[in-house]
Amino acid sequence: MGYVKRLVFACIMIVAIFTISQSWALDPALEGEYQKARLLLREGKQEEVLNIFRKVANENQTDIIINLGTINAMIDEAMSLKANNDPGWKRKIHNAFGDLRIIYSKNRSSPEVYLSFAKCYWLNNSLLKAEKSLKKAFYYKPGYIEALTFSGDMYLEEGKKIGITVFQGEASRAEARDSMETYRGKAKTSYEKALAMVELDNETKAMVHYKLGEVYLVLYDYKDKAREQWDSAVSIAAESPWGKKAQERLSTLK
Image 1: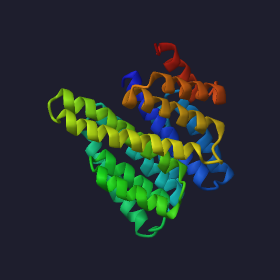
Image 2: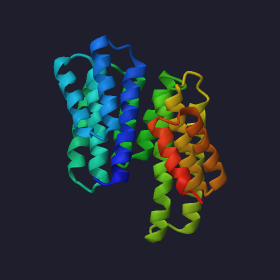
Image 3: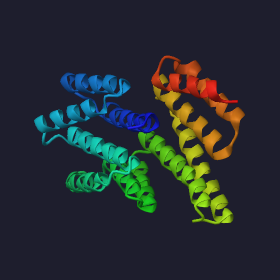
């Protein structure tokens, strides 16, 4: 897997782990496993992280926390496979949908379940259904940080696709302009709402500033604003993975 694709996969996996560890109180044994998973992610050992999810899930078959964590890991693995043009992603996402529906039947008001559905739908090229699932997640949990950051990620990636469709002749410049305006506005708003949440820890703040910098550079072509966001990420958490990524981006920004 290339460096950029490994980076994207690791970033999504970190968000999945934060979703579990911050949304629910875990017993000490499980907390230890998730902390171990976070360290492994920073070392780029994604397969070992998946093994942790699978092991804990097998030992806690009736626990929604663990099973949802396993499903999210499956979704992230499917995303990685799709990024590498591996058709195996379809089987992974099919399995994730099936497991989610089982959990949903007994947890119809869980914002975490709706967020996982949103990820599945988006990966399966159903943006409208993903948006509907996100609305449900926000209905049951207003200001849901993980859903806000995923929403930003989703629209950032949709915006990136616009240039490709124009280049390939699949969309007119007028259509592309309108779509870009929509996606970049929604990505920016999602990240800004996340930053407004007072309970954010410094590493998460650095992550959001980093991603907002990507929006400004890639979707707006505003280099100065991108630099401001990456400077903020470095000043908030210079030694965090996101602070280091921001430093790398700053070093290449001209």
